[in-house]
Length: 246
Figure 1 (tube, helix red, strand yellow):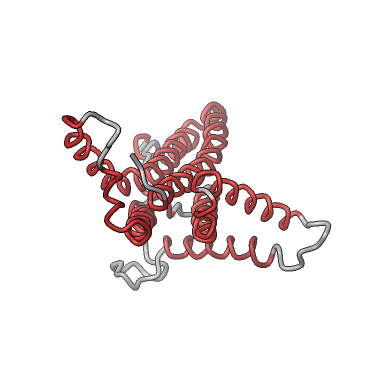
Figure 2 (figure 1 turned 90 degrees about the vertical axis):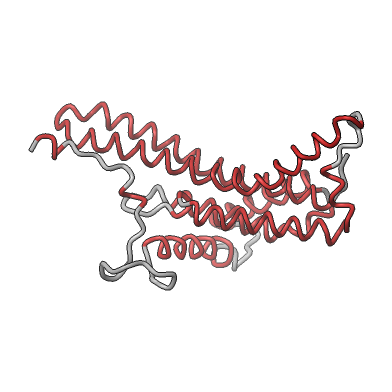
């Protein structure tokens, strides 16, 4: 019985379950992931639409936060991609806000972290990958392939570098998605492990509780940083599509 009380299942929190009933999950089945993805969209809408609808000279708290995020992402896009990339700011802004709120909402007790699943992060990464690739060919034509041919290197090693560049280019969506999902999954699993210790140790649970508090603060930082990393990498890839290289 003691062993049963000490049982910890940190990965159970990532199981996708239907919202209604206990049947199989199909592509059209409303699930816990669907619900928390909807909450993320709702939170973004509440901040950027409802929070700024008055546009007061003396801004409210929600308007101040919205303006701060707007300025931060706009500066990021302009600094990384240049003036040509500013036209794609709405997409980058939407991407940043969605990932940020999905990450942060995943820290709410009894919630579901949708961005811990590769199905979500890979979809976001593939949208960026295909969008940037198409944009690169539209803007540069066949010259977009020049990014794989390093003209500044000696001619003898250019073919080797070209193979490396091609492989690294197609690995982009893999690293882009796994970095986000893996960091969130690892952090939430660690919190669940320490929470299991706290529940099993009784009066001695004060140590795991302190550890949970510290890890929770770290996870909040990770939630923000990973949204930033995903977004700035998107800007870097966008810059590759807008400007010729090598």
